[in-house]
Length: 172
Image (cartoon, rainbow, N blue to C red; front, side, top):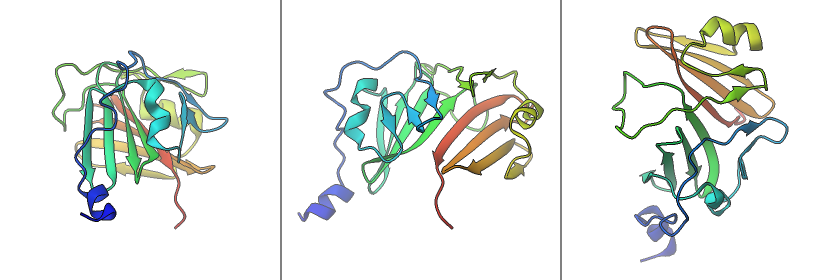
């Protein structure tokens, strides 16, 4: 099988020999867009200090998700490069929630602890008007883009913060 075909159809888990996972989600460092030991664009191997994820899955050719259930976060890699972070703040009524799911309480800009009690208005007061606001019957998403990064805050239908996503901004 050709190398490219093997990569696209690889079902192996490169994290299977890593040490056990961390129990808390690392902070996001805005100064260098760093999540614990890794920066956006870093190779998957740089995530090894985070430990073996509870769930490793390949969702698309060249794309994988690493979910740290007990610590309440997910990181994704696109073509082997760090591409996405999700902090799980509260259960998501739109998704199946794993029984071992833990939740994280990251801190936004050293001032605002992100919990389910944070409202969209709290985020808007802290960061100003969003670049985009997506509202439907099931959720509201506030999107902030700039400085090379996109930041999304997802709220459920009751206005509870459920998730905080961060990923590199792409040129359009």
